[in-house]
Image (cartoon, rainbow, N blue to C red):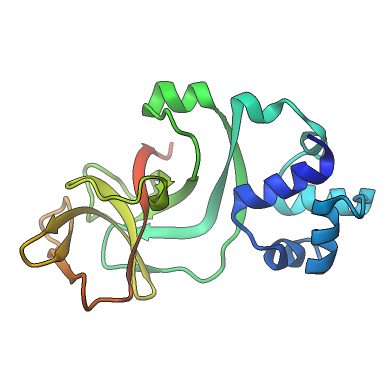
Length: 210
């Protein structure tokens, strides 16, 4: 894998469009397209901008073997999922976090390391299972495109982002958002009418802040 392909893979891992990637390194989308297709080669200045923007070393862009045993997971530094009444997220600062597949398997039981991301938990509605500031490891909903009853998910309702247990009610065709903390009411979503609701992903692991 050459450096052009590694740049494309980095962008895919971070789930950024060519326009979003270009903006972060002060370049145009057409330039990113040229990089990814091999029409252009990155200059030292561009490599430094990529390194600074995404918190990686320039050397990692030349590493052809890293991807076999390591996974680069985007950590959305400014994004919080509310264990409370909902958190609104505007600006997304993305930091790649590299973990080994062995670590993910041994600590979280993950056999599939695709579609992972990391955000923080805000609030106390999921206490004691999830504490304020806990880092959440999320696997994209589209990996299996199903909801496991009673599992914890990150989801959006309008502009708010929540972390809750989800439970389906087939008879009512609704989904309940359930907190661990009984001081918080259950939120019930009618699937047919609540178009602003979507599931982001399943919480497959958590790491407490020290």
